[in-house]
Image 1 (cartoon, rainbow, N blue to C red):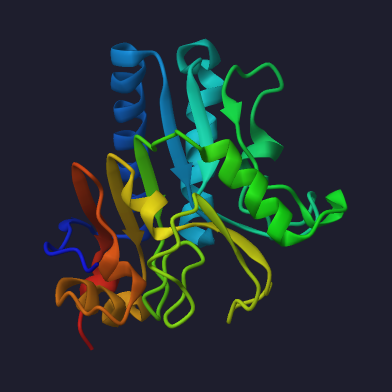
Image 2 (tube, one colour):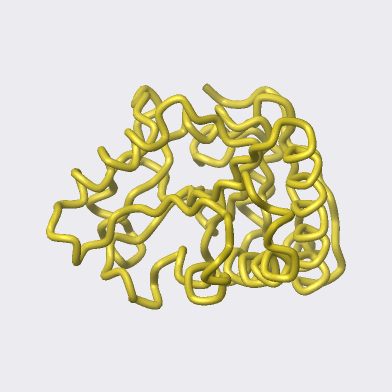
Length: 235
């Protein structure tokens, strides 16, 4: 079902300003959630901007690790490649986070764990059972895809928490992704978008164009779209 309301837009001048702004807000949201309930579930994303945000977040977490006990990290999608591959969305966090960090990290199984991608998806879905994200960060593809849900290749009726992707139009072909219902179970969903090549996809979200998966995304309480000026500027 298409979200009836377009996300609220927050504008930043540059990609770097966007990353810093989002990181500051994420840290504030995490602290509030931990103070309120003692736990916080955050879904991270990949892509160049998602990786930059992950790296900046880890720097905060390493400065005061004890302040983030109760934080759970997930990934809205993951490439089904070897564990140490640079293509893994989780790699920037795993390579930089302190060994004694109390943060709980929930990864998708890797391709070198001797299981098929379908099994990896089932395991991740089982891990996600009963869990609702307090905040999910999402990138946005030029074609309007989110996580690894691509136009014409996703099933809105699939209620599993995580699904296998066998024929991604972007390499690598095999991935594990949150389903649309799992994304929309999040209390808050924030799109993070940078670059002029994303302008058309943003326009389709605003127009509620149901042909793109991004138009079907909505948080239970909040849906925001953070974009730099390049992403919003028309040619």
